[in-house]
Image 1 (cartoon, rainbow, N blue to C red):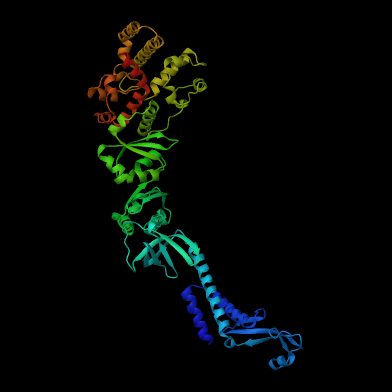
Image 2: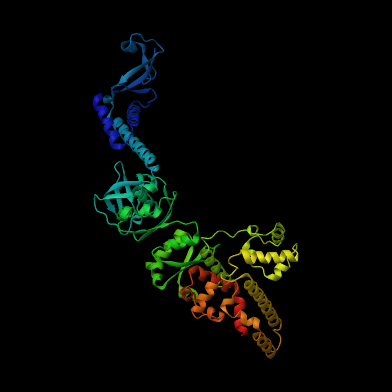
Length: 558
């Protein structure tokens, strides 16, 4: 009997996934429940298991002279028959044969035992699967009801709700299903394990299984966005410089990514490199489409504009806007996609234009060193540095923006030091000093440009202050200004402030000599001018943006 009981316990433990200790505890409760049903109390009942696996039920009774409660007491004469060494006041364990219990006691105990086993099994499985939430599990199609699929997980079954199924997937009985454990709940009917194949964490687990570099954290996933059944975008980055994050995910000849696509039933997957720079990240997020420019419209509101060629517009937006929608979620920016022509037609404020110009200049200078301090200029004295810092001039880019009037008004410098400072600027700053010109010609050009600027400012002041004059008088003033040599000098593109000789020659060779002609060129055509690089075009846009108000006023006056 002991051997049969041990075999039954082991089989039950294997089938229900319950430990043998818990099963023995259930058997104990079963016998105690039957004893209580038979005798009305189980306070004096004792259940013992021996090493062989045999179980025995005892009734613990006290030896007395006169019995008042036969369930808990026994007379001395009866006790001596069982044990001749016993005395009054001793307690004696008397074996009870469970076969003597009536049918009602057995049924009550059996019902309680089943309930106890269900609760134990539920608690055991809950503890096991609760720790596995977010992990991958493999099961088999069991049955379907109202679109929900019940999956055999071995010890229990899970449910794959219809809303967590990819629209691409079709399942049949006994199909192998790989899914994510999304939720584990206790319900009155039992344990409920909710599975999912549509969440982004499912894609993450699939990549961890297929890409060892992701599993060991050499390559990490920054973010995943997904439209289940249609397209997934995943941004990755590498913790080692010698490991390409995108190449690691794709694998040799695309073996790894093909395996992942098969698991997702042919869903398209875009793998792109994460970049801390939002401009570059937005450009990468719109992968498949070639983005020529990214303009940040409002950094606080995280609004940006992506500019693409005409033949790339549909690719950037995607079918029903899917590509740009996923890019918005991936970069966490509001991205609008426009063509070059649409961008030129947009009404962007002067502030945005300056922001665009600064952005183009940053892209052109991204491989250059940072703007150095004025103290690194050769020949500059501590007195000069201190005087410039007093007027908040600490960088070379700030220094070269000062005109001669502002240089002459710097306090703390004498005339000799001011002349020396001009010489240092002209000889040391490359983007101020034109190529292939000697120092004397450059000084003359600077002085001429300064005089022209002063004359232009004077004429502007007259025109602005005499708005109340009659139209004839105003026209006379403008006509006189137009006849001055200084105004003629700044009508040429070659005399724009800070323009280099290479840019000027490229424009003149293209047939653009006047500033008015330059303003009429759209951005797309500007970038196609032979001899004008993308960096040069960006620098030229900055010059236009910084001088657009003056140029537009001159055009109106003309």
